[in-house]
Image (cartoon, rainbow, N blue to C red):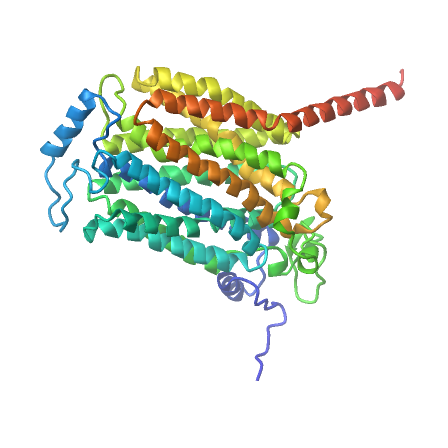
Length: 524
């Protein structure tokens, strides 16, 4: 026998169980604005936790490989001192001694092995990204994200378990990193698609610029947590973030509404925005024409590549993420192996200092989004930031060691210009192109386009840390030269779009002038 439904409350079994429970307690539907707030908050913390788990390995590197062939005699003496003056951690059944490193990463080829872990993770992540976008456009994104977050938590924790299990087999860590990269690839296309479903194009750059602070804040959170846990044993630096993303994944499963239509969204006349429909009301046209999402077929992979702007922005992101991810994975290591005011920082100090790069990234992402909204020119904004990053990278390498204040200022500015275009392209640009006019209202390309752009960028993200692992063994100056070259290429790849945007601006300006001349002001 069916149960009698309460007349004032519609039961929608597509709604997340947490939202259904809240509406049951309230005896009324949650407003459209509240749904949008839930989407922003849940997806924000979801991707924050993705990046927090991703950042941990860069902090653990200096504990796994404290001595490296790319350092001078002073640093070698410093690393030897740390290894021989620190006591073993009591109560831990492990062969690990703080400062002595961890086999097999503390041998002469330790830096290359760590670089190999990075590239394995990122190449699997990049490959998985293309499949994730394709799958994400065809299944429930809430379920898909939940699976990805739980899997990420599991394999991040298993890397840390190697500490207590006393595992010194390189291929164990390689396999765990590859599987972690596969599950990590579910995150970005899915969260961008969900946010794109709920927010229109107006002020999308600013909204997503603020929302995209989760990337840098996730890096900061991962750095701080991993650095704090490092003194208790490097395993904790991975297990704690792994448990964190598992918890957030459960919250996401309970509360994330994928689209307005999934919660019965329609236009509320009293609010002039979309809101969940009440009992007996018709569902009206949602924000991104999601009805077509149910009727139209999902856009194919090759078809998505043909959308105007997808290819140049994807290739630009390849080089932008090459720069950004080299900092993500190697900045703490670089800081701990570079004397600042004649002193080498500890692994914990280097990890904490590196967070200032991400603080600059938060400001850069918001600033790039706001500027692109005001100008109505995504390519001009992204290219300008990449060009500005070139001299800043040179200054950071040349003068970052002079003093702590100079290092902090230059690191902040570097993060601003490096992460600004990276954040803009992976958020507002991807959402814009995923709802491009050439798609004729079919919004089912959003996750696919996001996956293509960020997946291509993620290949660059794998190449950068891989090359750094080898080049840094010879010279860090050569690494920074590579990064400056990548930033230059990233800007040049947008040249055609920049010219197009400039031409459009000139035509709009002329049209406005002609309009004024044809309608002179009336004389009083």
